[in-house]
Amino acid sequence: MTVPLRIALFVPLMLVPALAVPAAAHAQRPARHAAPVTAPSLDGAWAGALDVGGTKLRLVFHLATTPAGLTATFDSPDQGANGLPTSSVTRSGDTLRIEAAQIHGVFEGTIAKDHSTITGTWTQGGNSLPLVLTPLKQGAVAEPKRPQNPVKPYPYQSIDVTYTNPTQHDVLAATLTLPAGKGPFPAALLITGSGPQDRDETLMGHKPFLVLSDYLTRHGIAVLRADDRGVGQSTGDFATATTADFATDAEAGVAFLKSRPEIDPHRIGLIGHSEGGVIAPMVAARNHDIAFIVLLAGTGVPGSEVLAEQQLRINVARGVPIAQAEDANAKERELLALVVNEKDPATRDAKLRKLMSQEMPLARVDGALRQLTAPWSLYFIRYDPAPALRQVTCPVLALDGSKDLQISATQNLVAIRRALTEGGNTHIVVKEMPGLNHLFQTATTGLPTEYPEIEETMAPVVLETITQWILANSGS
Image (tube, rainbow, N blue to C red; front, side, top):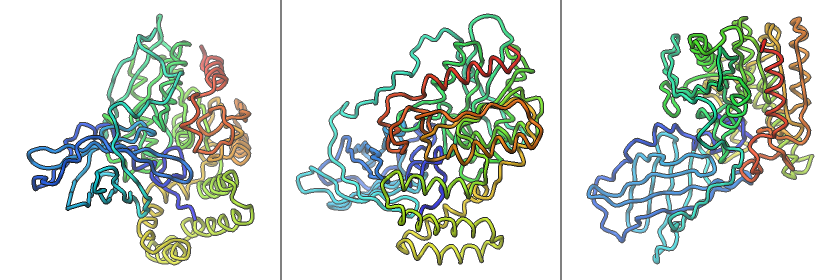
């Protein structure tokens, strides 16, 4: 059984969303143990890898002894997260326990007598995975090759800015890039996928929004991209927010763009990726001055259908026998249908707990239930994007990759076109991009396990398609 989670870009990996914690937390001082450490020192970097559904996610813990005791920070290199804080570090004899309360994560392990390993378990969100840490030499964690990442100096202006969501009072920190030459310019607001995302939409070493904004700006289109609320330099509470809340953050971004003299207020559009492709139509449906929207792996059917299809396609691609995959999918659909149809929380939770206990250890049920019934999960599972799409009147470009296993092109592109057409919109371009995955990389299998292994961040054909379509449909 796959439990729908707060997952970056809908990736069904149990630990991805929680590890991608706000960069602002990097500046926090690590928690200190109350008593001085008397055992032999563990100072230095210790590294290991979690096997999450076939994907290797590296963790690096940086331990240091101070007069006040043992401290720790940690990195998740494959998710571009460094210097993450811990809330407590405890060493008792040959046992080490590190807690990171902000992400509900705990590592507990046994220190080998020769200090060659720390063998233990990483627990997070009701799930536990084995993790063996070994000493890491300085510089041993190599940065993945990302040849598309732009290198400064840029041939355009890049300005750090902030603006406020007046309805929910969070302050969004962002980067505004302005093309060379004289404006006012057409502009695009980039809207991230699900899970706590920074302004570059950093995921597994890739920075898709950095690459996209660079390409657009070099071709005459201004771009605004922001850290999600509660992430990086932005304020606000991410954990309790839903897709509808994030839509108000996007509206605040549009208002900010309208206030800039370098931007043509009549040529402001939205580019949403994954969950951002759900948010963009929500905003455009109630703000008819939006000039255009681009949906990158957006959805056209209810979230419950998206997640059920995602689970089935990924299981089949991983080699799960079709009969077993279909049986698991039937159970998944039963779970999701219960979330959609049962409105009484107490009754819903009791029924969910009973179903979950049949498929997973009892120790995991509470964590899985909390994740499934969190505000974002409930909203996304129940939300149908079709009504908002029917109210969108501006030009729409909808793209998805043929190898996208998270948002099925065959399931969603047809539904997006249908809803737009039903609303009377005739300015529609819908394209399935051959051979591309959910991140719009050129892929072999489309599995999330490939994302960090592929050097390409975004296929050039996608960058060119988006840019040329905006220039043709924004009055440029």
